Length: 251
Ligand SMILES: [Zn+2]
Image 1 (cartoon, rainbow, N blue to C red):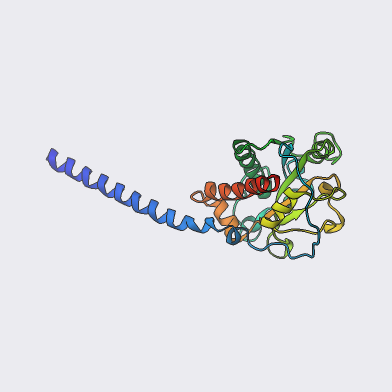
Image 2 (image 1 turned 90 degrees about the vertical axis):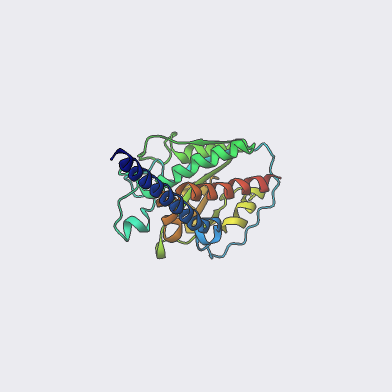
């Protein structure tokens, strides 16, 4: 009797292990789609942009990574809620913020972590307060970024673009009145480029803060971010492309 029970349990355990192994193999195979940056981030901006970043950059240039919309939740500029929420009715990733900000923050942290490991002089800023009415309040992304850029640093705000016809695609918006440098060129050669005067010059570029649109928050990119099995790998892929672009621009 006891032997039978033990045998039965053993069978179940073997079955579970086999099932787990196969499911892991299967999901790892599916993960390979995230290896392809072009497929993941989708279309690049095809707006006419003629700028070229040719200015040399000091290899110890201080870099500041800002998460787009970190201080404008609940206002008009909260960022895109993405295709999944807006079009397909999924729950937002976080009740208190737009999906775009949720991913901007995840990526911000990841970029700074890997960047430090690779020897970049890199840091992040998060205002913490998610709703600051006045863009010129000294605690906003833009005020901190503006001061940082004025002192010779490289300030960049990361974004995900709106889905479908509401967005443009991936690409870098260079600073408004500063000459684009080799980091700008390197990022643009990976992600694409926007014209300097995009939408008449946005708040960030007018303060000499670069804007990186990583990709539209839709399709494969958003699916791979939302799927718990592919999330880390997708964030890692985007992170390593961005950090590599910094390294290429500096060297
Ligand atoms: Zn945005």
